[in-house]
Every structure is written in C-alpha cells, then in structure tokens.
Length: 486
Ligand SMILES: Cc1cc2nc3c(=O)[nH]c(=O)nc-3n(C[C@H](O)[C@H](O)[C@H](O)COP(=O)(O)OP(=O)(O)OC[C@H]3O[C@@H](n4cnc5c(N)ncnc54)[C@H](O)[C@@H]3O)c2cc1C
Image 1 (cartoon, rainbow, N blue to C red):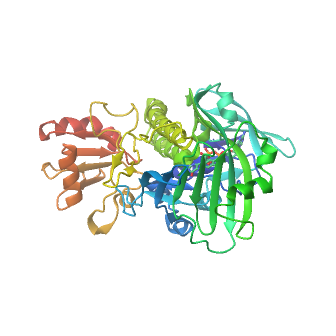
Image 2: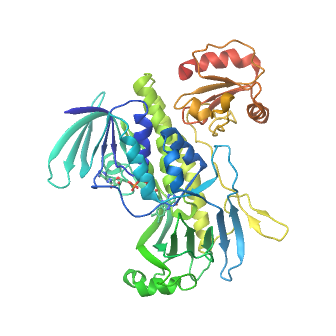
C-alpha cells in the first residue's frame, strides 16, 4: 500500500492551493480527483488582496497576474438605474501588498495551480478516481479509492486526509458532519458571454441591480468576458429561462446576439451553509466542502483559500516540528467565525440586491455630500484559537511591509514564523530566529505605535499570533513562544 504524508481529495481551487502550500514543505502528497480534468467553465470571477498574498507564497503571481484585471468596485442601482450604494475598491496597494480586488477566470487559476504542482517531485495526482471510504488507525489513515472508469479499487494510506471535494463532499459524508443550512436559498441563472468586439458602453465595474422585479448582477470580467446573473421567479420553468430567446430578451438593454457569444448558461441554487464539524481525527474539510455562500461578494473560493492557508502550516508544524495535535483543533475554531462573517455579509448583500434588505450591509455606510452611500470591505479577525482573545492584535492579518533591501516581508520569510521587534527592545536575540527590527523602518514603527505593542509574532500564514505590550514582559513573552518560533 502506497504511503503518503497527506492525501487531498478534490483538486479545485481549495485542493490546488492546499497541495501547493504543503508541497513547498517537501511533503509527499497524493491528490485524488474524480474528474478527468479541471472544470473548464467559469465560476469564480473575483478574489481579493489577501488571496493574492497566498498565491504569492505559492509562487504563481508572476505568471498569473497577466490573466487578471484590477477590479474597480461595485455599484448598486435601483429599478430607476440610480446608484443607491457604492462599494469602491480604490486602485491602491493595500496592507497585503496587492490591489484590493481582482477579476479572473477560474480555469486560468486552476491551470496555474496544477502547473505549479508539477514542480514538486513528491506530489502525485490520480484523476478519474474517487474516495470510497476512510479508516483511521492510531497514527495514520487507510483510504479506499475507486477508479470511476474501470471501478478498480486501490488502497493508500496517509497521516492526514483533507476533503476539498466541493459542495457535495463525500468526505463530509464519511465523517458524518452535518451541513447546516444558514438560510439563503435562491435560484439564479448565470450567463457567461464573450464579446465579439469592444462595447465601451458596458459598465467597467460590477453592477448589482437592486430591482424587486428582476434582481440581477453584471460582472466586468477579464478580457472580453462578461457575465450576467439574474434571479429566477418561481412561476417560470428552468427550461424556459435557459432558452436562447429568454436570455437574449433579458440581455436586450445591453447586448444582442451580434455582439457576443454565449459561452455558458446555467442555473445555480445560491445557498448559504456550513459544516458543523470540520475535523474528525486526522480528517479535515476545507473550501466548499466546509461552507457555501452565494456569490454576491465573490468570497466563496476566497474562503476556501483562507482555509488552505490556515490549515497547511498547522499540518506542517505537526509533521515537521512534532507539534501537539491540539494545534489542529484551532483550524475550525479560527476559520469558522471568519467565514460566517462573510456568509452573513453576503446574505445581507443578497437581500439588498433582492430589494428586501437595507444598504447597511457592512455596518460601515457613509454618505458623500451628494447623498450617495458608500460601504467598505470587511476583514474579519480569526475566531478563537491560538493566542489570547484579550490580545487586541491577535488574529488580525499582519501587513506585508517592505524590509531592508526592498524585499517584501513574505518573500524573505516565506512559510516561516517571524518575530518583529520595536526599537524599544535593546536585548540581543538569538540569530537563529526569523527576526526583524523596526529601527529605520517607518512602516513598522508606525505599526507598533498604532497597535500599542513593542513586539509581535507573525504566524506562517501572516496572521498575528500574539503581541507583547511592554519591555518588562518581553523576556517572559519570548520564553513562552520560543517553541513556536523555532
Ligand atoms: C456562479 C458562481 C460564481 C462564483 N463567483 C465567485 C467569485 O467571484 N469569487 C469567489 O471567491 N467564489 C466564487 N464562487 C464560489 C467558487 O466557485 C467556489 O467556492 C469554489 O469553486 C470552491 O472551490 P473548492 O475547491 O472548495 O470546490 P470545487 O471547485 O467544487 O472543487 C472540488 C473538486 O473536488 C472534486 N471532487 C468532488 N467529489 C469528489 C470525490 N468524491 N473524490 C474525488 N474528487 C472529488 C471535483 O471534481 C472538483 O474538482 C462562485 C460560485 C458560483 C457558482
């Protein structure tokens, strides 16, 4: 029986990200994918700065950037086409070191993730294969697989299994985790088009049509790709909605068949749900297998990539540094409340688009002098887990500053924890630790001033593990955290 460190079930964006992050540590990884290839048609079209930072760690940004465009933001308009709410995404580099929001074509990303995996000798992919059963022993798991073409059975084993097998996850079923419905369920049609020629009159940002008669979304995607999504009324058949005549009639205000090819038309049930249990023993769930949300904020895939980023270094710490398995229990508690915040906000956005909610979606609406309302993006902290909840800095993402020699923090300390010290710490610290001083770095000095701290420890996933408030406590703080930093 072939033995691996980790088996990942499902090679969508979550599985692809997780596999890459773990492969960077040199682990042997087997990826099981039931399809022959990746899903060739678009689904996700947006991701944010935090996610680009994960792609930076993986090392795909150079090649992937040319397949993206910077997203200018979203406007919500009412049935009279008047803008009732703005969600601007200014073209400014954020604390994560990237633009706030990007548009992309999901197959381009999946191709890049798979391409990068070819660089790692200890990664293997079994396509046309699905998982049948999992059996946990003391230190490993036995995984039974079936080839979907010839039904041949194969047994493999690993120390951990991660189910990244999407909304209808088999792994979720195998660990008997309940998928709890969080209340949003609505059928929408999704139509992807490729323009035959430029159509400058089409909006260059996302438009949410908050129109009680026909709630809809327009997405300005990469290149000549454009997408319209619209809610389906109960009294109309899916067959009729998907007929060409119905769709072109819906698109009449913007396009006619001479303007664009219809790449895809389909119906999705947009829903919000979350798995009760994300871990059972040595088995984990991540991505759509663990949570679902409607796409109004473009955060479903982003949430899966955050899961991968949170889980990868914890598995690595257990496999490489012999850390206690308790570390792995913090995966669900840290990620659960973060993703719930996105689900809640997305549902509010959905209600507003359906013209049954208010514009107070993120609780941060401001009005400009002309009365236009504007909302901000959310960046929820991690839920309870590592570090103390009383520590106000703990669980926030640490900015990606440039350090000496112009290198970025993430590039210099990729996959490693970092101890960051303010100039108030004069003590000599072991050169074995990954260490930076704020001296002569204005951004870092400002960070310490604003965060009311004199030292912080940044986790490998770039979230703050803990901060130390006073020089007096520093010695104790360092001793307490040495095993984490080593
Ligand atoms: C219309 C629409 C628009 C969206 N827009 C956005 C957006 O703009 N931004 C965003 O962040 N998200 C968006 N999303 C959500 C996003 O597409 C998903 O969250 C994302 O694809 C989930 O990735 P995943 O890897 O977790 O699951 P999936 O992409 O579903 O991948 C799961 C993989 O597992 C495989 N698999 C399934 N079962 C098995 C099995 N038993 N054994 C082996 N393999 C298996 C599947 O073949 C698949 O390859 C959108 C979704 C939709 C429907």
